[in-house]
Length: 504
Image (cartoon, rainbow, N blue to C red; front, side, top):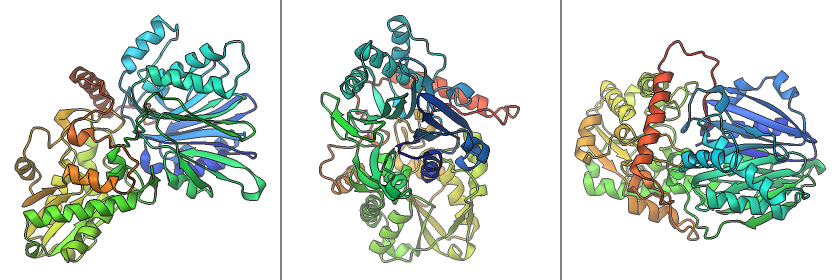
């Protein structure tokens, strides 16, 4: 899960991309990068850290040009601490291509071998983004060799990418001297949308992961990029579009609505905020059927993503909604910080209980989801220490029982507290007096109702169904091995503080 943005305008775009990345900072806090292009020359700066820390005045001055792209990221594939794996990625032929990618390729290992043995392209890192940019470069070279590059060549190359690549991918790329390309995988797993602005006579087209990046920078949302569709925006600002996949279907990632996206975004025609309200409505029905409402004194959300669901649940139950935890906004989010060691240390640094909301009460804590269980256990204990008489826990998402292979940091079964455990066993592990989960079918139903055009959802972490149909237990095991080595490196206290994180 990363945040990506691309802009083509008639004036310098460095500040505009910076502002958009700030609006997408919630999608990744490990590293940030911007590339701009002036004529056919690329200018790049990327480093580990938050956007505000990575880019100083001197860095911004070194990013001239009227077209560019940027990314904020957290690692889910490759070596999480290799300087070579930070995005954007660049290849010099054909034309010169720079690319950012949000998602995860499930056949990256096979593609890497194919690129070396058949396409004669060398991959130097473990990053699936480097694989993806080389597949795109090879296909562009194949369809446009010795010809002036035209939109139909670009679309033919994207169609070939769809035929070869598996997994989730939302992509923005710059083709030196020609324009900006954006495309989305045939299932539409990871989000991508575009908008336009003509403020002060400057025609701008922006492509971004979430609508909030467009609205916050003065652009009007045009629409989402369709699954399998490609947008090619030439240097004159003309937008060319084409469906490049054979059988596209819209199956966005359910976890975007549960947790990942900002509540003020609209993804694939669905308000994230409204989706979370609806989840609170169905969760209330589960609570009522499990726990008599008269045993609940107060409903308290665990900041931030659970607030809409908790408010709707409290309203449905007729119980007070209270803010019982204060979040330290200057500590990175637990889910985005890779490594169990860091997670365990960070919970009490970022949350503190307000004792008066807990003392002597039966409290219902509402979280957006329960993944590994360590955070939930700590929070339940904090509520007890604050004086709660009984502590109930409700999750606005169903049990997370299966690895996610499409770009969310939950790659192994062993990390998931609900895998091969009953709800009662999970309740005992986190120490709650009662545990209520969302129903997976009800969740899908109430979110889909907001846009009937959606074919379904990528909800593999909840239901074990992998929408691309090509992922095996052996692939999960390989991912586990790659991730384990990265986690071992992260816990090394001697690691250089200047090292960059990996591709996603």
